[in-house]
Length: 152
Image (tube, rainbow, N blue to C red; front, side, top):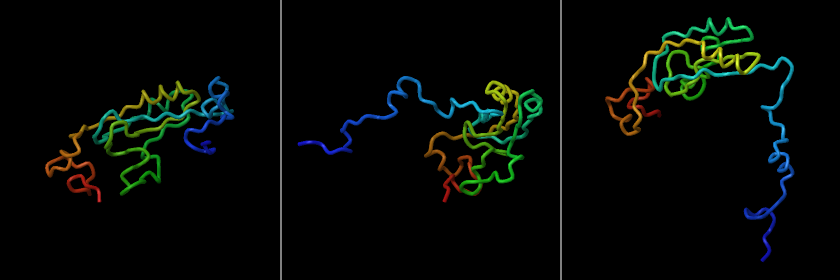
């Protein structure tokens, strides 16, 4: 019995296969445009903490850094369920690697340097890594409006 075209096991020639396997394909990351900037996100090193202070002054003073922003710089920051999934976190992080600040610079290296120079003062909060333990009444709450960490 002959297989019909389109079946999972059917063979077909990819028109982009040779370029991709030879390294000749051009991807967005390969593009270099005039006045192009590079972005970098500073992420939290805590799974659960209050953000007491963010000092971006050193990052902003680096030559070649065009912009450094935090949650205070974004007027439409609260998005997601209950507005607690902001683009940049301003008062509290609820997940390891939460986004805290963003940098735009003329080179990727300068963006990285600027991120490293941002100082964030955290107040670590109790964490729970077991989902069943997080449902216990005495477990620390991740969201103030969610009793026993159950989001309706």
